[in-house]
Amino acid sequence: MKAILVDSSSAILLYKSGWLNPTLNQFRLFTGQAASRELTVPGYPGAAHFQRLFEQGEIKVLPVDAAQTYRDDALETMGAGESGCIRHFLGGVGDFLLLDDGRAAAYCRARKIPYVNALLMPRILALGDDGIAPPTVADAMGRIYALGRYAPWVRDHACRLSDAALAPFRP
Image 1: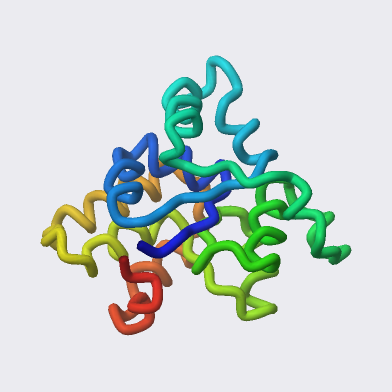
Image 2: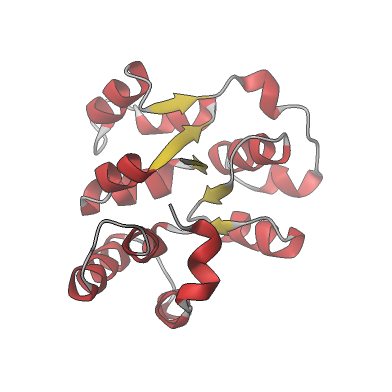
């Protein structure tokens, strides 16, 4: 199974849309300390569920010290959850990143770091062997788009990407 480093906003979008469990079935998920704290704030959507996933090891929380080995001033402009996930990736953890922060995405694009956003996960999962039908994928992407804060160009780009472009992220 491929390993994904996930930030809190992406994890919450997958949880709210019902696509977190299908993602967990096909990938190993990791996150940093800051993102895990953001995901378990009492009263927030899915906080108790995420706490159980961390306790059961379904999403592995990485130690802080591993994320501190990579320094870059550009990472300081992001939230702690996003920068922590990127630092862990640069430190050698994970096959790609799953994040939904614009600054983090721009950072990854500029440095050719492999990443996707939550909007693409239904399409990526459909590339696996689960036989997810195209109408289901389109509905899921519409739901995630409605839940998230995506610019229209992000949605359009996600819909236009070829399956070949998504193949490196395939389960």
